[in-house]
Length: 360
Image (cartoon, rainbow, N blue to C red; front, side, top):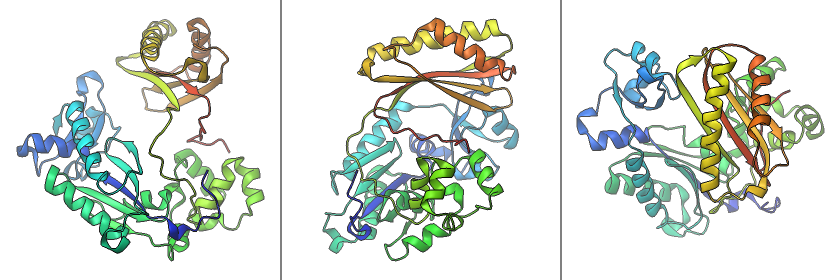
């Protein structure tokens, strides 16, 4: 971890987030889509979900992870574009080449967003704000795709800031305003605070980051365990994590959404076997070091879209199907509702996992 005595104003970090990336690429491939409500999604007849929605579609309340069938009901003239992952990947590669003109310290988060550390870039007299503007302009000029940016002394604030002026805008959080900016953020802006955790925090009178300031670090650690220190820092706009150019895989998983809901344990068993076999086949073909497996994870999504996940430690290099099936059955019997998705995977050693929905 970076030296925690490092002054925040010594770091200049940009978070670039492409605007409606998948849909924007589709509009680039087919210009007739521009100005119309468009989503990139699977077919509703096959239980598809929305991967991305442009701003015209969002006006109808459509968002990513929504069932395609629901999106179609919300917008009668909705255009559903199929996925063209090879095109998205190619665009992402070209955009990263643009990033490398400004810094070698790049941390991709996905195909459409990345952190850039431009602390050593002297262009525009070292102004990260002007560098970010130039990067966005170059992406438009060369790729005809729009991007938004957040500029800040750390990753947390940069990522939050990139959302501030979307689409096709940018926002800078200077070191001087970092504390005040972070203090006024809704608690849900902290990564890891999901809907369940947010509700629990609200019951404790915690609505904004500044509400966490009344709790001493020791008390936060009692309430939230090892995550308490992170909450203490982020609520004050402090984030010591460096931008990492290289990364280590933290997990490996496979999931499947079914065309028809699974209502019986026998159906669960049949489909889980297929998911498990696919997982085993893929992980054997991957470069994952099997000796680093330290836990297995299950995910079930029900007909009502409620989702449950469960984690088990394991000492086996590869999990055994019979043992995993027993765990899955126990998991499913807890709800006994029709199942639309099953996921299975493993955690790898040295991964600093954070529970997205914390149990308070």
